[in-house]
Length: 116
Length: 168
Image (cartoon, rainbow over all chains, first blue to last red; front, side, top):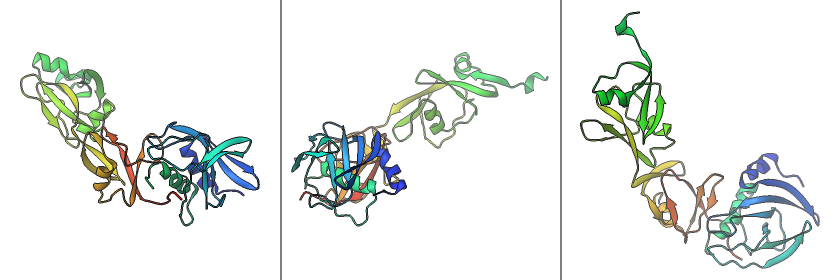
């Protein structure tokens, strides 16, 4: 699945490298060196954005490490094997009607900046 | 060439101030701001332009004129300064206590130092209950957690966004 070029271009602002990665029939967006919100440790990590339904979520953001943030998160996905790497994700449901890729990414990053 | 009509290429205004002489017309003026010498092409630059010469902005700094024989004077950003004014030695800058931040493109005054996300959102009549505060800091806007103080120096750029998403 190809994502709109203008949306992938906008997504590049958030990370050092951007690539498409297909695994198990799903096209993920690989965000190398993604900047995380203030208060996160580490402040930068790699991520995979899955803009389509996966594991019962309308979209998902996988991170290369279990990030420590200002709010405790329910990391219900550990060491998921995607693209020959292990990934972590916390339980976070984004309900946005037709978001752009960057809107979707920011909505997931909000998970680090929101109590519930 | 008539002497009276002669225009100097570049003048150091401090030298004239120290000698108590009138500053003549020139193509350019060398002035000192915080001890740093900068070049200005007009005899009547604005405060904002002078601040920009030392990489500072009026949203965080004020500009102060220094004179040889009388008190210093604060220059407003939009105010034109007469560099040929007798006794003008140069300029100082000072970090403002009340600085300007930008939220959704509009300027708002706020006290410098550690501020809360709630305090910043209240400037636009919003609260942390329904809105996320995002800061543009050397990149695209990223959300700020409400339980982390925000260090305000002046000129910060924020955006507010209706909250979306939640733990499930």
